[in-house]
Length: 272
Image (cartoon, rainbow, N blue to C red; front, top):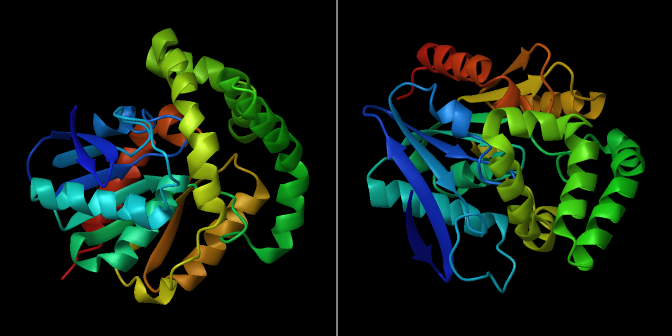
């Protein structure tokens, strides 16, 4: 893992393989979301660890979505890896959208896996349901984070969003040490990333003209499927695929299916 400082924040990356590049932008909570996928994609794969997940000095100010996108652009430019296919999961999907909007010269395609259930992306009819379903768990998580009990905060949030079996999945895929490390990384998520996502102003989706693949898990809740459909209708060149048996843990539980979806779709969507 290599790192560099950008405007006081530290980002990291691995850069493997040769050929056309794919940039992986992980979800919030912990940085290892795309470790299994990176091993299964062909060509050059740049797996980024975003600011807050790559070590370095503690971040004192909120890193906005546009800042994370600028960091991703800096990594691509530093490596000479752009333009690239950009894959984001959950909050990483929001950063991918921002990157494609702000730096279209660096993006050939977008893959948005399970975009997050934030108010600015949700179908308005689903906002109340999502708040009623996730709000209590979010309150518990933020309260625990405020007390400094990050493992409890992480457990409350992940149980609600990822399901009660999330711990066994993380241990199976990342090991016990990986679970412990993931819990330790979650402090940034609660203090910094959640506020940044909540105050993000959506970009003009009509300006994102590159091909976009929206990926959803068949076992994910209805609001996720309606959010994906809403994005597919707003993006000029979007298509959707559903992975059977998957939920928001998709990159960890179904990395092969996700890799197959990205690879086969990319072959069918030539860019100019």
